[in-house]
Length: 374
Ligand SMILES: Cc1cc2nc3c(=O)[nH]c(=O)nc-3n(C[C@H](O)[C@H](O)[C@H](O)COP(=O)(O)OP(=O)(O)OC[C@H]3O[C@@H](n4cnc5c(N)ncnc54)[C@H](O)[C@@H]3O)c2cc1C
Image 1: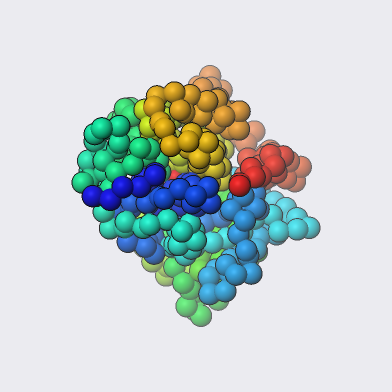
Image 2: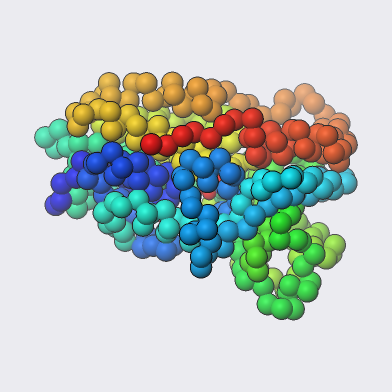
């Protein structure tokens, strides 16, 4: 049993960011993750410049030996309508591979890495949190993603009554022949909204790597939706016909739907463990990183003593940053499905709507400045 100032459970973007900030504040920190790193994480892998700035990512250092794909344009539209290309004068986003990105951030955090340990026991003993008889600390950060054991400890009903997005994707390095059969440009990800607006599919090329996926709120028959989407893309020459057929799936909660409690007695959650992914885009890395920065700031300012009041202001700061949670109820049922489809296809096929709402608003959050880290 080792003693630390803080234990972070989960080494994804939320966990590594929190650990990095706590180490910078001089705390002795351990990150416990059930997987050994580098590890894969199901994700399209686009991050906005705001994330790069908050993380103070040295892009030159990062791209040495890792994929960092600059994005300067997008093709967007609905599967039933036209596609629109929107160009930016500067880099509007980046494409990363999660097994590289998460590994880099975890190593850079400077925390003690206790990887390959699935957290099964979280016990309170003498004012400390004891994890798996492996490590103990006065404060625990739950950054274990959607299925976080700390979120469960705080009462999250994982996998039962929660309203989730289910997403499937495949990521692979293309052969020369596959590259020839792929019309997607490296700097231009493609986003295709489902006709019923319950989700969207994407094709994202990062150098020689292709990432294809689809996520939906109405997640019944998700595998059928994904198969139909890929057939549709292949028929239009967007993706190679012989790409791998084995897709990986994962779930997450959109911010507007999440009812998870964000903190407790000497416990705080960050990222997907709370369910913070942006409602329209499902982008979760930025909220994961930003919530971790806020959580770390509170921990570092607590002077080593933690109780149920320590994180009293945390939920308010999350709401101030990301808006109210648990209020989103989706598109009203009284709008007829046919009308929804027609209006959506029309709007999504126009240049001004795509730039102003879909990209600048929903996907890039360009009007919200980056959160500074310490
Ligand atoms: C298909 C798909 C595509 C996506 N694409 C994007 C995208 O392009 N851009 C974007 O911003 N967001 C995207 N997201 C969302 C994004 O992946 C998540 O929001 C983000 O990973 C959240 O980070 P996190 O650190 O909170 O959790 P995670 O990245 O899930 O990390 C959690 C960590 O906790 C560990 N863990 C879990 N349980 C335990 C346990 N019991 N004990 C110990 N360790 C444990 C896991 O091994 C993992 O390393 C996508 C999601 C999906 C499903």
